Length: 88
Image 1: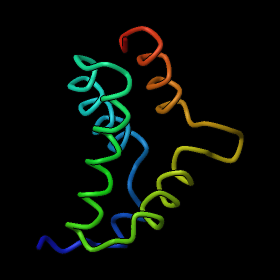
Image 2 (image 1 turned 90 degrees about the horizontal axis):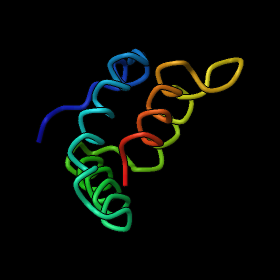
Image 3 (image 1 turned 90 degrees about the vertical axis):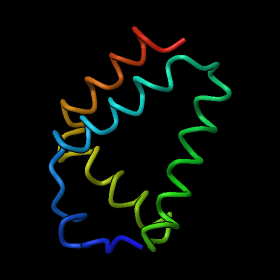
């Protein structure tokens, strides 16, 4: 099992996380919305289990990264715009 470095997890840059998110979204866009959300959830839950981190902890750290002091960070607003324009 790969070793998860919690220091790196807690200091991840919004840019890197947004880029990884865009990569996943790009592949999901070929599926129906019902499959997109379940596919994304499956990847999240399976990856958390594989890396030995509770899913809730990964979710919380990510939610905190998405939301800066004054709302959603620009990198993640870009993902919202991509979804509105590209996802079925």
